[in-house]
Length: 288
Image 1 (cartoon, one colour):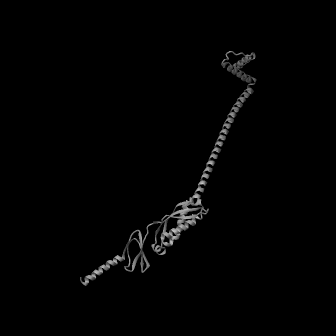
Image 2 (spheres, rainbow, N blue to C red):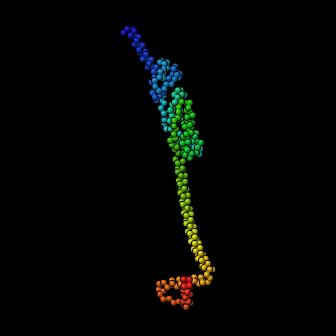
Image 3 (cartoon, rainbow, N blue to C red):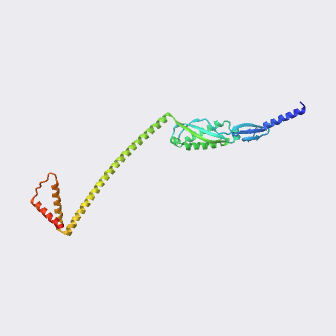
């Protein structure tokens, strides 16, 4: 092999090596941190990138996919001095890898420690009932504080979750007793309200019945008063004859009813009754 061929071969190998060292293909899910002489030079995004061979090197390959921290449990004491164990989970992703790789060594450990401190501090401001009922508000508060704490690390906290709030056995038993007592109280209140309602309905029914009886009596009295008024008007217009006519008519009706009764085919009448009959027929005839 001649010297010329050797030079061409060395040149070709050098060109291939330069291309190999100078071209970097970054996957969509990663970002590459480039250093030159040990200092930050640039950050390569997804796609084809070019660097200076032998001067620049890819020092860190950082995944930008969303990550989930392992579920962590930490003890906390509420404002009303109840010990609780809180299970939390945090999701995050790296937005600025140049900050992450140069400002923090253990990202997961740092975030876990930060979350634990914030959870203890926030739960210490709340009573147990508030922790149980305002969990969504507590999660939002924790997420906001964690985001502020990790902002210098180039990290975005996408979600923070409180998976469970566990109580010790003594507290659980006390809460169960309180719950049973509250259920018993509600049952007694419901029963008392039912009895009260029954008495009210009974009283309303009696009042309605009394009102209806009074109304019937008033109608009867009005009818009798009207009848009396009619008779009085007839007497005022026709004199004593109208009164005699009315009395005679009542006598005839009474005798007729007496004759229609069972076992009353034979009727004995006093003499003045017969005279009354006669007077009644005369009056009836005269009215006719």
